[in-house]
Length: 322
Image (tube, rainbow, N blue to C red; front, side, top):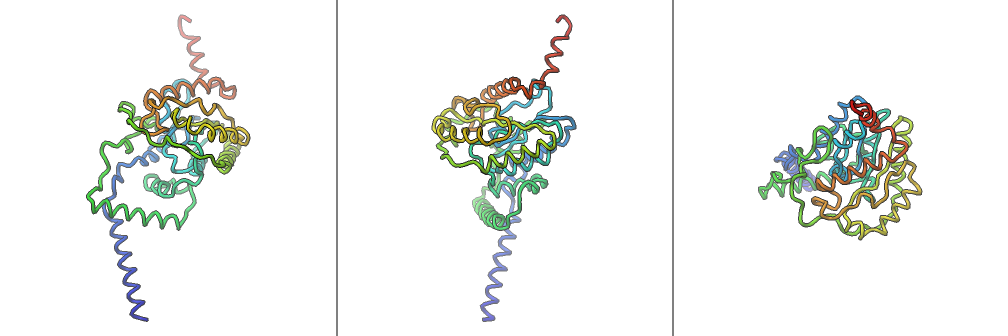
């Protein structure tokens, strides 16, 4: 019995040393990761002292707007806080609660049926680049153990195969973002992929948990004098047609149950597949321009936001020769 116990202890010791050793191997692309953008965006938002516009959602927002044009048109600083849908809706809303200030305006545009929980691995990786992200989700020891095991497995496989460096041609890197706004801009002058990912069917499911989470954030925002508005996301025409029934059903749920103002219709930001870069949510330069112009138009036609951009109009009327 004693020999058996000693053998078990020796086995666990070997496994422990192995995993520690794997953890010390070179990390694949860790210094040039797309999630580094979280730190950049928080540095940017912390530097703005005046009321601002915050764009929030997944990568459909990160890739989807020209924040410089929005800022120029609406006369307010704009921060694109969005980065990846996989972080989950709860993470995004908790993040917003930590950064919003009185008189800020939030435009929230999550992907369809976005999971409130998100992916543990992505949330854990977010903390590697921005430690403050630990406050945006609850610790889950079981999920952490699973993540650690899978991460070490991938690291060992990559190391043994000699593939420990990130693809230098990937747009998903720390240089993807406009440091003045947080927009993804690295792809704007690149050719779109011939085949798009994530344009298949999305089965309908109840999104009551997501709606409830947004309503809770809406209550928080109201108490803190922050205005929040909901925007249906962008997607390709093919994706929209394939899922029109499910999206219409979701839109009906949102209209009935969401307590914050909804500014657009589901098809307002739907464009030809040729205007998307690599997935059914990521717009090209031309597509981004169309969505930005449409959003500005929607905002200007919203009575609660009528004062935005008024400074520009007044300046034009009082300029010499007018």
